[in-house]
Length: 286
Image (tube, rainbow, N blue to C red; front, side):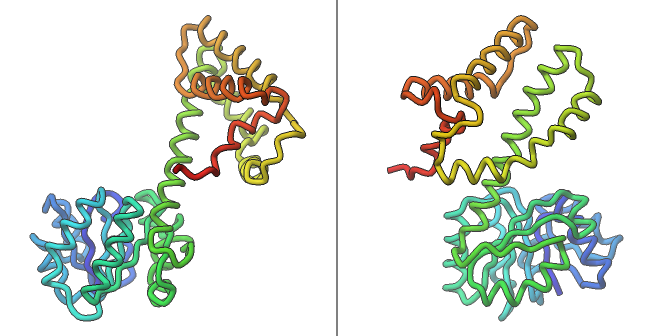
């Protein structure tokens, strides 16, 4: 039997897929009505996590944050049986994930952090990507079950907190892309460029195909042979900002980029490749 805590959009769809595969599933949610709504699909709802945990071989969690994960697991602890494995799909702090691995190991219980790049429909269709890290033997034993829940399971190494770090990195990237697209869409709209034309441009230009190569160049640190000089990139940024001001269309992301460019030009890098603005990115903070 599987217990699942957290019946939001993601958790509830995970549960529906598990039930379709013939799994027995106990469910709990802080708002009890969300758990009870799954009883018509075959789940058994409980009013407290301790009762839901009794008899489970695995307990999965999709909860908002570290505090919620810790609170719910403490409330469920007395109901956990011998050999149960905890699988947390929540997005949490790296140190929180590390502390939970250590805390539950001391109690004789395996804890696997397995955050996901999955939306509700991915959970329903068993597509998307699930991350995992930590003890290799624990992961190997869980991998067949986890693989049935998603399109791909990516093991990231023995560090228990590595999956949590990579989930934050991925979400950070998505926020940057979305924020940048918001600037682009605002600028295009103000200029009278219709969305279908913008879509055609981006499909043909396909900037996403450049991400891996740009990252590699940043990591290699070779900025002295420019394909786009920083001073010229800054000129283009000036044109964009001047035009957005004329159109009375404020941008959110581009001004910060322009400020960073100015700082690197002042440091003597005007003729370097514009990606020199990332040169300090791999320096660790003191």
